[in-house]
Image (cartoon, rainbow, N blue to C red; front, side, top):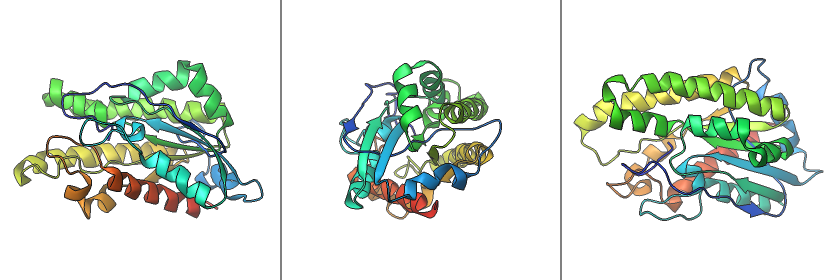
Length: 255
């Protein structure tokens, strides 16, 4: 999720560049494309080039469970491509605290983000958790309203990405349980909201012909290890490696 620490929804943005090449990911379209058709160039090994753009919240930005920034799943994805003899050009626009509204505004109005999307052949996205978390904090009685906001903004995000670059492969992440240390009673009220958020993200991704990549089950296997701080919802480096591995598996399948 835009796993921003509880009570801390906005932090500095992180942008990284690594020489070489990759691809980018974003959200829904009016005329959906086939996920396979959009991603075929990724596995053309004659090019050995990837232009990769990472979009999202604090997970893309690399926020860790102890108020610091380190490697994150886009960094580990880049490493996998490099190990497979790809040259990688990498731009990370992840921002801690970002909501779907923030990302939509970047896609629509930020020339730097737009230019990198136009050049990308791979995009990964994680967005929407902060919409839900903010509503839980400020207006819990109407928390489900945030799901409609996420759906509408994802539609614009994915559709706009396709208009900027109709051939880019886009992979959109589902969120893991950020509250593994909570009591069973507390989780019983929170997990249905997480499931509803992931279903919203999945539906919008599929409708746009993009690839939805679920993360809840793989993180759940060792969730207290991957989310070690009871006072923070972010993954540690091992958790980010697991996320990168799941993205990598799904990129491999799109041939």
